[in-house]
Image (cartoon, rainbow, N blue to C red; front, side):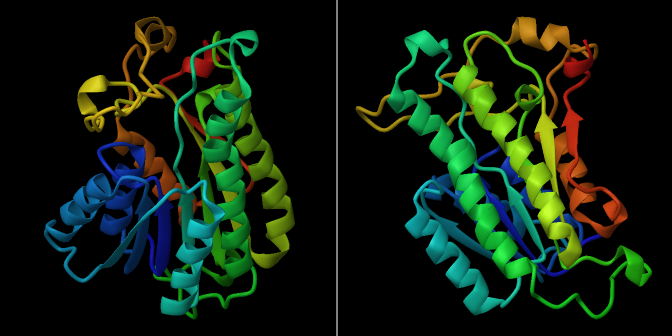
Length: 280
């Protein structure tokens, strides 16, 4: 389904970004650029891909760093441009959970920490991605043999949340950051359409990841404060008609589809993958 160069942020560990990275590797991509704040979990993702059967010919590059630091992002995209000269797919997945407090009990540090990762850094990555994609050539031959009408210069998928569509108690900053991602997606899709670049968002529900399960999270360093402890999500899970958490792989499959030319007429959409949470 895919070919060329892909970038995935937030790719470390056993969460959604890692599952997307593995799904891209299995879908025909030839060059994969992965980044995460945690160098150890990023290496785990890379090792898993490299040790998988039939994936030995994929070139995987990992760069660990803080996606909310524009200097790191500049370095990341300079590396992509220097090494490959193009970017065919981007998945902006890096994100953190909220502070689990209402507005009047939050402070500017809470706002800046969550917004800088979930929205500001995603906006800056989108800027750099569009700068590369809008003027690059369309690959000479679609791997799927689609007619020229369906071909694209690039595809961006932004990872928002079901809480970018609805609200919940004690999450105004997080919800607002994900609503912002959806708004950005719509506007970028309009501006990118004349250049045959597609921009869409995916809105995961409650997914079994380190953000929702303490047992999956890497241990904290000595003296390090836990800034995004998971909540008790039993009630939220039961709101969804399917009454279970989703898996990272279920989200990854939709991301691969949205990235590919099979989704060639999907533009500016926010696809919900939430077991029905937002319809109930």
